[in-house]
Amino acid sequence: MYSSVLRVPTNDDEVSYVNTEDSLISSRTSTETVNSDKKELDCYLSKRTRKLGDHVWLIIGVVAMLWGTGMLIYTPYELLMDQRIHMLPGLPPFDWWLHPPDEVLLKVYIFNVTNSEEFLNSTDAKLKLEEVGPIIYREKLRHTNPIFNENGTLTYTANRSAIYLPELNTIDMNQTIIMPNLAVLFIPSYFYDAPFYMKMGVNLMMSRSKSSPFVRTTIQNYLWNETDPILDVCQKLAPSLVPTKNVGILDRIYSNFEDNVTVYIGPTFGHDRFFLIDNMTDRNGSRREKLSTISNQERYSQGTSKSTG
Image (cartoon, helix red, strand yellow):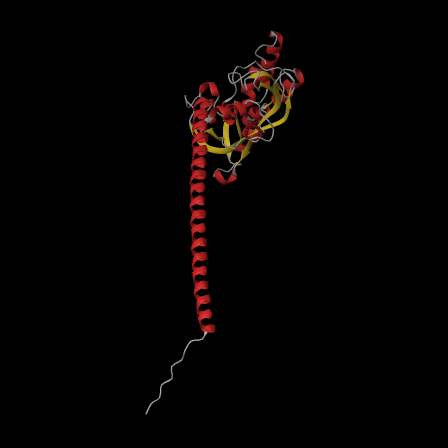
């Protein structure tokens, strides 16, 4: 036979059960309260974020509208042009002008006379020429000694020189050519406004000299170091009229390419007169003819003037 035992709860068990139930109810109530507070906080933060986002977009819209309106009234181009006319050291307009880019290539062509003897003895009525070139140089423009004057002008020294580029040339500079004698051609131009008696003396010297109308020389000498004995005599006769014994073509061109220039800058003279030349003298201080415009490369290095767009 099986026996069964019936357990009768005591008062302590009843008390424990009641306490446990109260604890569960209290915990559930606390959890519900925390969840409710969290929801309210999330709702508040969400509303605050939306309001802040609306304010940010409003500010961005106002700034964009003001910026667009400003661009219509005062364009970036005008801002740059106004900054340019001040020519302040350290800013791009001044630095670009002081160190302009090397953009100009000089290509020289010369023409070798192939029938000089036949032409001189009248066998041929016309000269026969052979083209030699191009001989390529890079023209270097330098601006030095900038001085900002109290009257709002800028004075500086402008110098141009030709730099031979061996990597771009295929012609031997020591090649022999026959060319017109530049000394014989230049002497009459030196004495074109001399007194009559001096012209007669020069004509007499040229007729008795052994200077030929044509000269056999090298390409290098013809461009940079061409001379003739008649130049020595004429320079002794009239040193003021014959300034040099070197009549090389490029030497004559670039030996005079150094000038002291004064130009208009700043808001006092405005955009219309910006970088127009006020005064120009050569390296010896002789005043050159006053110019109203500047050379193409000067204007290129300064950019297009505002008045021309």
